[in-house]
Length: 81
Image 1 (cartoon, rainbow, N blue to C red):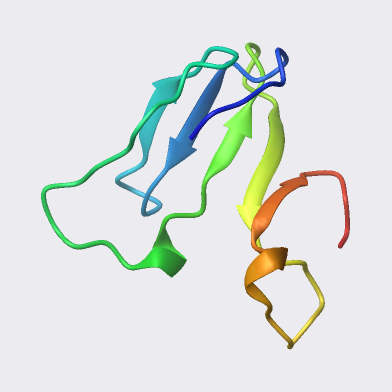
Image 2 (cartoon, helix red, strand yellow):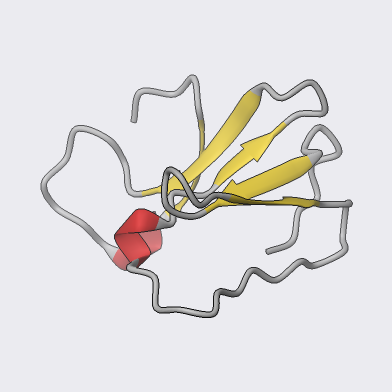
């Protein structure tokens, strides 16, 4: 993952009780990896600010039953879409 948003301090990814957290800096990519298989639906990436406030979620839009690849992206946590 890579960001151009200076408000993002770290990203958490993984199953609820096995989350991995990595610090992220603008224009510096980070890579997440696991020793075992992980289902994509269990990753639930979230980008946080320095004070731990969730800013973005990597997901499909909410309240839809039609999924298109181009809609899998970062959405603001406060956004209802």
